[in-house]
Length: 288
Image 1: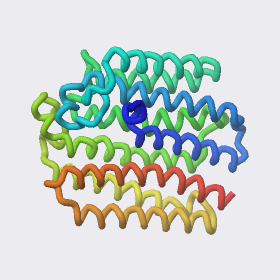
Image 2: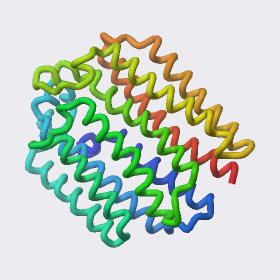
Image 3: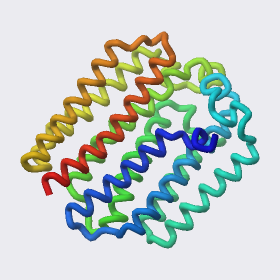
């Protein structure tokens, strides 16, 4: 139940991104944190993640009963009061950890918590506004995670490969932000959440997401020879082209009337997001 409350795909994404950035920092011989700092950063990342997804579930109980009835609050398996205790603890823990790690991590954690609150909670409730909601998600995944975590591990400056990874995750994060609402049109329309899927229709949004994902994959493939040497560059190019081909192949066979199939495609996008961090870290280590 608690695992489902934490939305596992987001926890995995946070874990892979933090570990990959740590591996790149170590391989590049940049001044980097030790294993204890990696562990602390992971705990902070996990708890921030639970805060963001948890507060969203607390604010969207009625919507989730239509769109995601399997979630523990919507299903009646977890009370709202218990969920508030979990969310509260997951706001305090990362801030307390960040304060022991310095300014960079404190600012990153505070920014992620603030954006997560503003996304779901009144009076701002940014999720009501499709473009702003997508930008909010992209800012956390792109700027806060990549640059904040990297500068914590390697405070001397941002490596070119990390700038490239940040550029990659911007269109990818925007795609995730708009595609996540495609299976949820019924509940969002009923409760006045004007997502891109509600306003433009599922087919258009899938096309927008696929375009952004393709730009990200091909952009990183083009950049690979300028970032890495030899086998590392070849590995990165092959991985990007393979991911792009898989996205198009699955999209061509996607039945938009099948909610389960659309959800599975969205989960594929998340898996390729995880893959990107592992791929870049692996390619960098090979070239180092």
